[in-house]
Image (cartoon, rainbow, N blue to C red; front, side, top):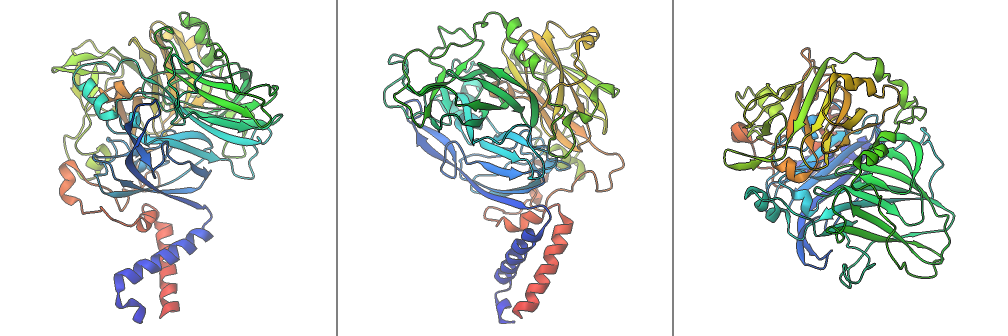
Length: 595
């Protein structure tokens, strides 16, 4: 038994050995990543600036997983401020403890590690991750997250010849701290300084607008082949129009759900949204082709520089791309026409998703709605001397103690379950007001945008059916225009200024789930709330307990132990008692072997 003379080290070694052997034999494989978030200096628009890198990369690395995989991501915070990583669109079944937003998690302090551990349930598709606190995404920290179909589940199109990820987004040469200071002082963020494609500036298509020497993204392809392009708008607040010169974009997926396949010459992708296109290389190779992401629904003459440009290069290309960019849609001042595009997106009801059954087998149109919430957003206003943004007149204040953690530890007064189901005629206020949602309810949410800017709304823990979208003020008569047959299911949806969008969601995922605007300026100013969804007969089967490595803060800060250099291996076991006992048996076997 000499092995155990240094008992803690040896035991930990045995746990590692047992854990690795156990995971290799487990029915559902585990993919593991180590993320170190730190600052690096880059110059994507020709101006040196400090950005947030993941493992020294900007943007961060791909998380590549498959349906049912267990995902373990150990995050090291080497920033100078608190950090949380969030995984929008990943549904975190029964496990909001891993969601990575302030209402559900205490932040990771500087120089600390924390391990996220969750299982991918019944999902496929294209998503991205990012830091959720204090506009940090405006400085980077984002990266792609792909969930592949299991081998036994066919995709509803021929296997592409390659797969490309494009992270597009508006970009400021001021970092997130400076942008925060602007908002805190009551200023608007103003026009962005450009648009990045995969963290790089524009190809020099115009010698007046684009400085010389900027690195730009190049996608290399072979003629005649078809590639999948996964395009994500990771920006701060600007809707973007995406297009590839001379090539059609065949839309096949939005945020984890296959669509009826339609060709577009260009496609609007709003803040926080993700789309997949099949693009066939069917043009001649006399020259390279432009890949463009340009600002949408703005004054084009003023916003010309807010354009991202990359290059599509055939392997037999005979020269560089030259001349003007492919034209943007001509409906800038006719948003009635622009709304036809999102209305045209339909779910592919004959395709299997993560399971071998059609995605359209869930007949949402015949389910009775249990609750309706009308959420109205207004232009930012001054509340208590500060510029704030609101939903139904409430500007959300994040609790000192996360909501579900407060519940389980009997912390009173952390929040209020009194979020109004419709706008009320009362003064605007700052509050920690949460929706008291009904477990297994089927809710209708009307997103009414009375602001002056295009907005995107996101619901953590869920996807929802986008059943209606129109101009003006929603009324009960608007339900007559709903699509109750094949509306697309997704997790982030645009709401046009002066218009509304209606979604339906089945509340079967217990936890505390964030409902927010994805435009970072409005989110930072308080345009969010949470849905509290609890099972009154909870028996441990519908909601996981807090993980062993749960962080404590606020009224529970006294319970926190130093986890600054905690190894991630033990956290894989959190919230998974079957795996824990399997590992325990493996450890015992290892003890016998080594004794």
